[in-house]
Image (cartoon, rainbow over all chains, first blue to last red; front, side, top):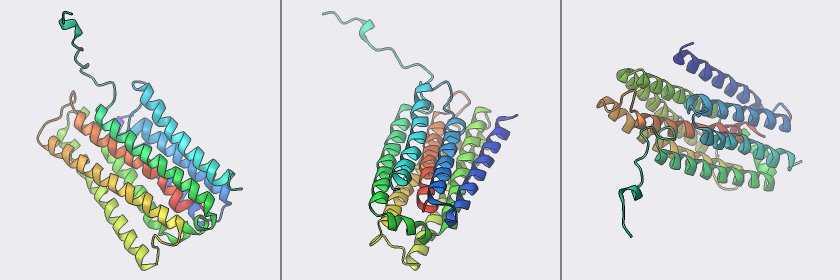
Length: 87
Length: 198
């Protein structure tokens, strides 16, 4: 697979994940479930951008750990503070 | 004490230990730290004023938020294609992808301007509701970073046009696109907080 095709597939995946998250905006699903899915999707999208668009792979282990830590920690913290603590 | 040439630090290696350059990573980490603090403020106000945050997303124009998320992601994709092109020694193709990235950045700003205008028409102003105040605080800050990103892209674009980059040396394009992706990353977190969570 060419680099161009691979990048296009990652972009389509990001678009699909965005539409999945947007489908929850009507508020029909329970709040905690919405938060879990929407923030989970944000984490996955962030990890895809870091790995495939910023190209932080094994060549840059420290930067990759820092960036992945950020995109895992921030949505997790927001979910815990916004949904679990608020119960 | 005798100073010898051995005391002089060695030159940095030809290939930087970070993609782009160290300067852009200082900028990226400053940006992400700034947003992390804002996300903490968001969590604090959400806990303090739950009713504002429950009603808040329903007051916003979700279509504008979704549109801008797709625009931002697509611009990141274009930036990636510019990087692929310059590595293949296709400077003109790289230039076209950089122009596309910049144009989508401008579309993002135009949609945001339209959205703010829509907000004003519908009484969505930053006083009296902590969610809306947080919305303006986060999105206006992000908007400033989009403007910085656009300026960086213009610089990389002009340098590419002038033939400054090659497959071996394209640090400027890499730095400008990395900053752009980091700005996209911040928006990826902002989007659910403002438009999805109730």
